[in-house]
Image (cartoon, rainbow, N blue to C red; front, top):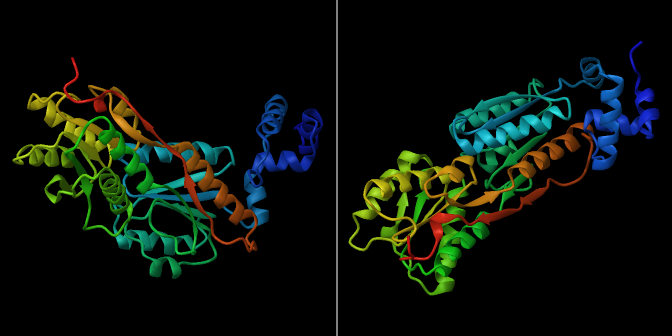
Length: 341
């Protein structure tokens, strides 16, 4: 005979409602209680009829995730964390990539209104407030990243200005005075590059260092090849930089590749700091100093926002603007200049 919800509740010493909250993920449950309920679920082999539950509630059990690039290590790691966290809620994730194309982002927003998904998490590169305002209100949407939400949807983001300031200040404090920035993207409407540039400028001003447009390199994408091309251009400048702040780890890895090719010592000749905390940076030679956003918390908070809107569609709580913590992981690419080694 199959176990019932109340059997699990009795074994775990909680109410059936608490068991239901753990199974559905509709309401946050204390970690100790959640673990006890999960142990009881496993012991009794309880398997909820997800399809029937969703059908009764008028839901599909499917959520959408729209990211710019599946092949990007940062977005790949984030997507994996979102899928893992969604499985804890018995949700299936349909993943699509937009490449930052405005029509693709609009199409996915419009498609969410067809009730194919219960909610959508999207990291927009081109989406403006007009498109967001025009979206269907039938399906909850959570924004990831720096695009201003304008009070129209929940958003989960990192404080890019602060993080870039900290990265640049770290380079200044290590004795660097000619700090280049790689990653400007004037062709895009998203705020990521603008905010990281603002934080870089903020740190320079506070230290009394001049801004030099020749040390600020624009890129088409945030990939290794773009970082390599920007580093090549910087090394051709009359006055070479003594440090690089790259707006992504992939850009930083491309810059490191060119430095190694040209016999430039890292960090003795040029220090390098990246952004994103991707796994590849740990295995660079030398290991890459980087800004590490709490990607697991990004995933969990985004899903919680979605759950709150899905299970309480009549809520009057205004859209949330959630700032996720980050840390500067100091590794070997950002030591002081002319150190021994």
